[in-house]
Image 1 (cartoon, rainbow, N blue to C red):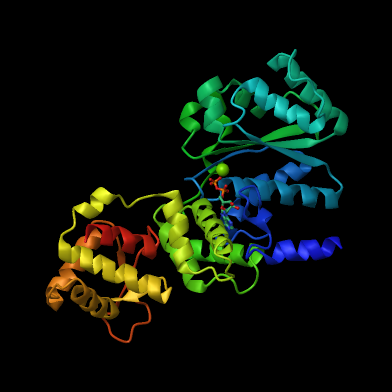
Image 2 (image 1 turned 60 degrees about the vertical axis):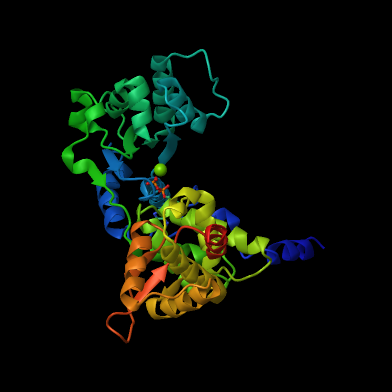
Amino acid sequence: MSSIIEDELASSSVIQRVDRLDFDYVPEELPHRDTQLRMLAQLFKQTLKGVSQNAVITGPVGSGKTAMAKKLCQELSKVARKKGSILDYVHVNCRKRSTESMVLLAVLNHFDPRFPDRGFSVQEMLEVLKRQLTRKKTHLIIVLDEADALLKKSGSDLIYDLSRFSDESSQQQMGVSLLLVSQHDILRLLDDASISTFKRSNRLNLEKYTRDELFDIVSQRVELAFLPGTVQEDSIELIADIASEWGDARFAIELLGKAGIAADHEHTDKVVPEFVRAAKAETYSVVTETKLQNLNRHQLLTLDAIANRLHRDGTAYLNTGDAEKMYAFICEQHEEKPRGHTMFWQYLKDIENAGFITVKKSGKGQLGTTQLISLPDIPAEIMHQKVNEIL
Ligand SMILES: Nc1ncnc2c1ncn2[C@@H]1O[C@H](COP(=O)(O)OP(=O)(O)O)[C@@H](O)[C@H]1O
Ligand SMILES: [Mg+2]
């Protein structure tokens, strides 16, 4: 019986595995991060023999810092298990735990979930950790994610103590490695003594993702999380376009998830570009009435033509030739005489500069000058309504 219910619940959504759209989920493969993962693996190779290593990962939001740190730790402990050595890791988010005791408590709770959350000084907690690791002969990698939060609030003492943890010990296996993760360069927040342990070579800086990289990342997520055939390719293209402004994989995946939910709301199993635009509008309500008020009548008519066509066709892009035909048609409806070709191009430029549309060269155009117009910020239908309120 229960499988019938499961079937029914699953079939009502284009999203098959909602957990795989979660920000905590780390896919098996991380497209376009091979070189960087390889570098991390080289850096941390020695931890398998119990040799401590300290490193820093920096990069903008959504560049894959957290995912890389998790992937590295998962793979290392997997290999360690095969080799019969003991390697463990804890991932601590310092934005949520920004004091030394809170960070240490998270580490100790990993070994003993009932370790009391008060009554121990930082020094005592460090002692307890040392005893735990010695007893278990474990090498522990501590990931301090968003480490700048800890450094700003509590200084670098704990990082210093942890980075020196192994020196004092005579035990071979037992020790601590540190992986600091931060959006900004954090070395300047460390004191001189700690900086020397985070040598220059132990820094990995991740760049923001390019549009094409985002396309691949979103495509992978579509395969992992969506029912086959539900997400149209031009929806993925549009998501990549939108998120490429920040190069942020998190934002791209968020858009994908929201577009899926929008499709569910409409009881359709096709995630079309219109749902991507809706997802973006939900996240950023970029277009304001005042911005539209600044457009003149023919600029508005041009914008309306584009919104109309994109909505009617259900596509992500519209070529300029079709846009111009639609513009003539819309002008007629509003009893306006359409302006000439040159003026039409000027209107396109104007509304592009105002941020309402984007225009890019077509990759596959037969004509050299074919350009594709896209409406990335807002559902075409809503744009059409808003423009018509003014017209
Ligand atoms: N190369 C990649 N391949 C697949 N998914 C990725 C990749 N990089 C990041 N992600 C996904 O994007 C989201 C944000 O990544 P995250 O590692 O949290 O970024 P950061 O920590 O740099 O802000 C997560 O859902 C993550 O799984
Ligand atoms: Mg992160």
